Length: 196
Image (cartoon, rainbow, N blue to C red; front, side):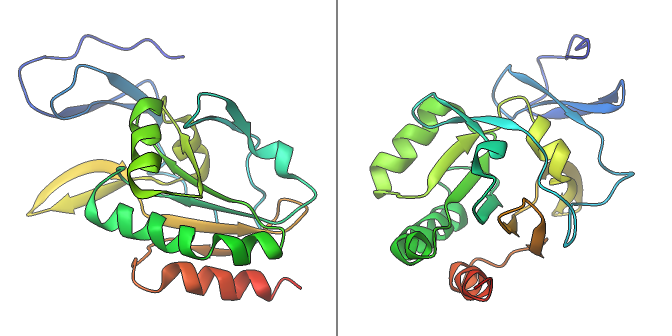
């Protein structure tokens, strides 16, 4: 891991570019994250191969994407657990999880939330998708989902709401780089059915 410089504890939120990565301080917390700078590279897309990365599941166990080779896989990124859009998306995928299961396609939902928060999120909403934490931001960096965003004219770095459908070889056959939540889970299911 790269050296993390001292961050000023006074601003509510800040981020600086350092050593080829973004070092950010989440609003209201003192935890720093280091994420490779993806501004010079594009988000993964159709034809790319899923990176060989490992996350931490809501139950604390490691989740290696390479363990899913041999079967199709849905991986989706969302900004923050238990917020309205992210909750709706997780509930929508959960509502279709049996259909994904019949196709033999696991669904992994990734955010940078801590494991304990993911566990509470899953229990509170009865979620059946596999929630995974990218605590150090390396997975977002590998997928290119750590992007510059803008809200009320203020630019900041954050997780893009994006989804990737990979075939059994790990090749991405469909990518949704800028997801609108309504109807998205059903769209992904239709694309998954087309894998045959």
